[in-house]
Length: 191
Image (cartoon, rainbow, N blue to C red; front, side, top):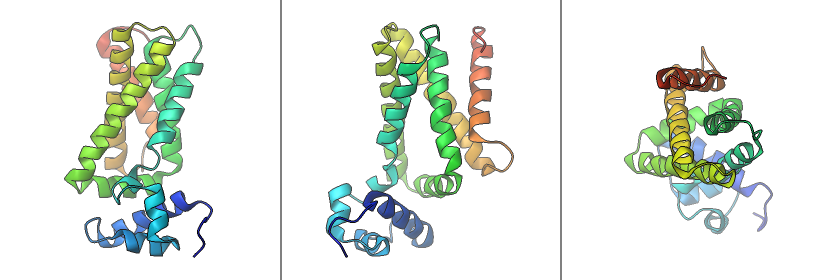
């Protein structure tokens, strides 16, 4: 096994996901994940502090994408419209990786420790969008409410998509529908 293997993080993620699905999260060790990926335990720990964090590999990428889309939204876009565009962009990427996203979610849903980590991730995504809106000059309260509402729309759409296993509706469509319903119940803006 080479010391500097290409795509180590992605290989470790794929190996962990396979093993968690096959054997269960609790029954899988870091050594087994590394072996399945064709890497060493040492390489695993260079990338992840523990076997839980391998499931959250994409968090930083999601944060970057949310920030980019919110920041680059047209100046005329309302805070909620900028957040909706960001959530749609992230959702499109998840929809493209549907199989692995659904397997990952089933692993997360089965363990309280992972569900807790998922909630921390969700809070971080809302904070990321709040910061990005603030950088656009949006009032802090409006920024936070828009980001939190957008995160809630995403969460509800994601749950609906997972329950359906992506069979009848795409995640992006469910996100769009969620934002439309939010706008309707708020009695305000339409896109």
